[in-house]
Length: 419
Image (tube, rainbow, N blue to C red; front, side, top):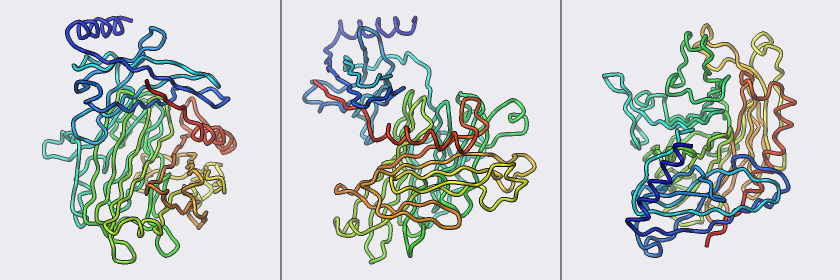
């Protein structure tokens, strides 16, 4: 309460001393089901329409303050979006007041998200950076601490490898809290004894959980022949993190090249992650229209022995409706069997049908072959659970049963109208 009062006082000072602009934002849940901590994105009007450069924001609903953040999505150091979360009843409509300010105001809530892109250094301090970019021929995988950009909510953690694989790796937790600032994906024996989480997936040659791959000769392929690869932190919270993974000058089968950018969004209170892919070709749209990609989930534990599986049968499916899932148990790191025990996990990916052109299954994976839409984009969703969670899913049956509602929720985002 003191934090809200402080923020209100700060806003009052700004209002008294400078111009502000207030937007009336209507959020509509057209779905019959309730939504918890539903993401809401408000695109900011152009600066000339606002009358000043937006540097601060406050959101209220019915006179009560709503936690929010102001985001610069394109990296030009100017705000593009306001983001907040809200609970919505089925068929409910809410009205919010979004007050745009010419001055920044102090944060009034602790972050519920962790984001890190760090480099190794001689002092072993692992300084945070906002972007890492390298020639496609350079191998700097071991120069990136945690081996890639890392994001975390209270429920789960993800990292995307900075190399030709770009696999999505998973961090599962017993408790709902932020842990990666302490464990950094490399949980020690002492931390394990204290109840901290751990890396829960070994992908090997499989696709992992929702990793985006090229599709060549009827199978997934890594991003080997690229001119430049990079990773960028777009926004760091306190409620949403967005990171960008990109490959420039990717060599296509016909000799042409294209650029591919992947944006990963994770929100507070969520275990699922939204993946947005954009493509651009120097040869125009002709190459992209015929280009194919793939994603999916691996068959967890399919190569493990019965002792390693600990009674968790490897099982899963890839559906024509765009939902693929698996459940199984295996060692999360083959090099740390004495430290890390086998981990039962559930994986899932949902791809809206407009991006699906085929389903495939091989010895290691359940796969979707992907195509772009008319705007050269792809969107899909990734989720997972770890059996170690106190408030989670502990059998394949529980995990699979939860996914239909998750898929339906992704198909029914709230609509946002701004005045």
